[in-house]
Length: 434
Image 1 (cartoon, rainbow, N blue to C red):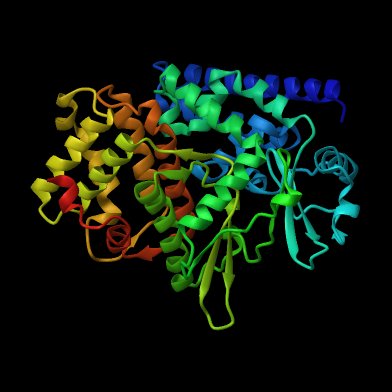
Image 2 (cartoon, rainbow, N blue to C red; image 1 turned 180 degrees about the vertical axis):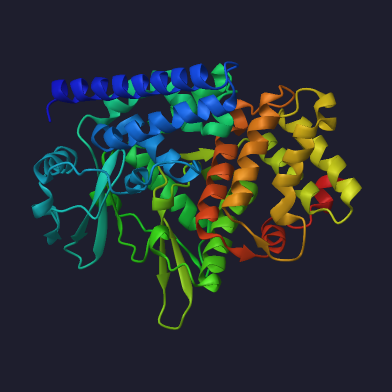
């Protein structure tokens, strides 16, 4: 598809999505509730999502990213969206080979002992091909789509697209600074040199862990638009058996340890917990290994933000409920999330506190299912809508990661002792709270 045709199709899809939204919203308002309720917005969103599912795979870039996010965070998202995690329509092999040659100086068939022309995965910004190196090692080679960096920048020029990429709970209340932070982080995903550094950083942080696995990078066969990594093997989350609670708990434990432990202990994190970014490998002896993939949206957490976040979770873990609640709220104020103290007494705030703490409030195992995720999402949306709380730019991507991780866990519906898991990552916090 040439650039003119791509632009024509992209604009056509945008128009159809817009018309679907306008038509559905107008119909809902005229026939039922003239006040413009959240229910009206939901009907309009669902109509738009159906059109988005039809077109986002071909459009890729920002549209596909919005569709991917909706696919695992929106309870009513069309099933067609799920294929966009790592299965959007692929770019022809010849176009991919040209990118490899432009970046590395030779076509992939010369650089590798074997190159599979059919991709093993295709996502919003690039696709992954299996290859065997001349060193005999098996590789997964991620190659950026031609022209995708420009297409992504064009999509993200729209504040509305950026808001959708923050997630439905966070997107409505974003400040201009927060939108700019999100835009910069997503645009940075087109720099595979930075992603290679992030892979090595995560691997170092979790080196020696018996469960967590991060692919090694072949720097000599990588560049800004090509990333050659050790090939990981295993099942994606969507293909895990539904009748194996021990497996679900083991996978969820690894995901929580990485999602909470990395920012709290190491002050950086992956802000894009897409379900397609995990592979589950079961060893012959029954041990489970969880591969963490795709670190394009890796973000550093400022020390003051990390300290406030750590204190917030320490407050939740405090054995003294009153003392813990006080420290939790002090941490909210320190982080810049609490705008008005009076909001602490509101029903919306108390509901959000209870939902956030629920998995970690008891030593008993907790079921992290879709009902819980829906409650967390709705209470987060509600507490932000009251105006007494906000998500500052420095914490937007962290909370995007946390809410996205919650949605991923809900897919597994695991039962696990999340309080103990979190405590093992961040300790009791007594020293931090003095």
